[in-house]
Length: 285
Image (tube, rainbow, N blue to C red; front, side, top):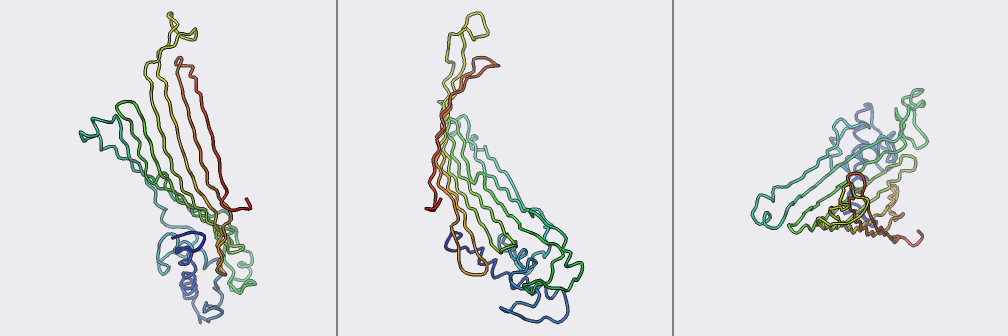
């Protein structure tokens, strides 16, 4: 579950901080002194070195006890694209369809937007900042974790009578963690698409644009209509206290219609209608 009221992964993020802090303190060696909120001294709950591994472990479903403490990942994030057309082997689909295709796609990216050497660490590796945390060797401003099911599931078909039907569901999520103010901004998106198409075959038009002696053109008229609904919302989550804010977002509907006709190999006419409208999820937008 992840909405403006509660996020299970975000709560894991909070809980993982203490595990990561203890691992860092043990790795540093020496006597571990417990400070505020039971965190070891030098690795508090706002430390960049604590937050980043805790964030990645929570949102990648990895144990906080075993995840790497480095900012850069050793193993790439997974991605795949699956397309299945095997339904056309069955007689039922052969009798009614020209084409049936199922598709599923997933992509994830992890990026560090900006980082630089910490000169305070170079001067004093055991020094602490104003929050009582050890200086990190590298200062990172924020990191992004993006994942997309594009599509989660898609069905693309064409019937024997030239009617085309395409339906898809998409889902995406973007998490941006800022180390300047310890805020996590989460953008969630859901999208539903329905596409209809029809091919009117061998439409004859008499025109001087034809590149033949009879001044006639025989071509197909391709009609397509797409209906889309998308919901996205931006949620701001605070690490230091229980407060999630709905920062923005909107419900969007769109209708697109196109009709094209090829007068020749070099000249095609396309007529289109494109209508979109939206409603904000918060009253101040």
